[in-house]
Amino acid sequence: MDVEMDAIKEGVLYFSTDSEARVWESLVFSLTLKALMGFQIQEGRKLQRLNHPIEEIRDVVPKASLGSPDFFKLLAVREMLRLRTENPKEAQSWRSLIREPLDSYLENEDEASEGLALGQVGVPGNLYRLVQHRLKEDGPLLVHLCRVPSEKGLDAQNYKCAGCPQQIGPSLGTASLCELSGQYYCDSCHCGDTSIIIPSRMLHNWDLTQREVSKGMWLLAQVQQEPLLNLEQLNPDLEHHAEPMSQTHSLRQKLCLLEDYLHTCHKKLQERTGQHVYLLESSHLYSVMDLQQIAEGQYVNFLLTLMHVASNHVFHCDLCTQRNFICQICHANDIIFPFQCERTTRCTACKAVFHLSCKMLA
Image 1: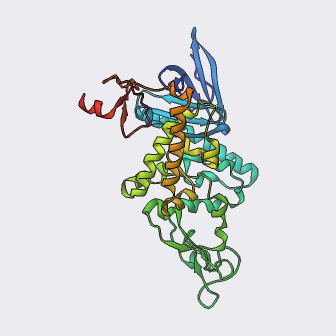
Image 2: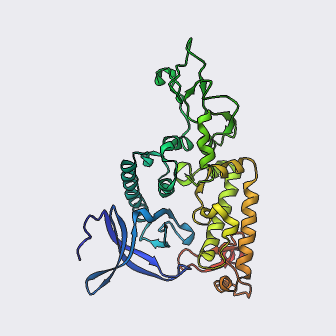
Image 3: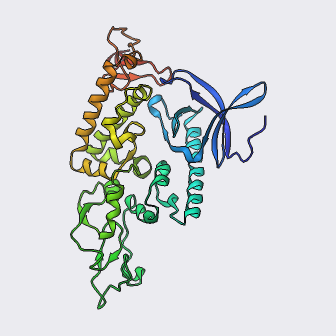
């Protein structure tokens, strides 16, 4: 059986054929710079069954909630794929390699439009959203969302304002530091009356201090609701050091478990999530607005409201309740669901759900 031409990687992956990820079938997946394809083997021949062009892939993220690090999820324009490998190392390899064609796609887009090489932004888990973003000409500023600024001094700027040709520095003109970019600006470009929490400092140091930024940082207002920040890539340990992030991450994980139900139900809560549909897709993606609301203590209440509405929907929906579980230890009549993390636990092997108390006593 021949390997596909131009294949970066080809091998067997297990593909879930049902919404509850209980039934899996093996397909030969082939990844090229143009597409991710899945083939069924019949009589020694490869019959194409799946084809997802790189430009239609939105994200590729771990899906440990299915039982182990062997699982990952690919979000495409047309559908969501649940995939499984033989071991966590192989899953990581596939996720990393799928992101490489995304980088290449972005570079090609950049050459064609003379825009920005968005692959340098530093959020590889969410590159497709950056491709879609309309502010390509201002793309170099996006890097400041996720990197703590490093002040290099006026000499690195040739004593010129970072926003205009005005000369600044001793005997030339006032130089004011923008705390978002780490660059210096003249009085016209930096009025000193705009102070914000710097997203990168919050992500990396849990620094909630408001700092002055230049007028050129209006970009933040344009992208503040875009989920451009992948916490898993930028600082996965933050939830262990900041209680608000720990609580937020826990609620986000529960919402992702709920998504497994809402994804297949026609009564989706899109009017509730609005522009926050990514909350149901990944527990790692955040927008600048999310970070601001976390700092202000508003975000958890927003997530709790979504959890209440979404879980109530599952409990009362004829379609969703058919996908309930019965504890396989006590066999009690009450139905349980995997997103009830306070009282249930899920077997990593068979995906059965148990009462947490029963599992601890078993």
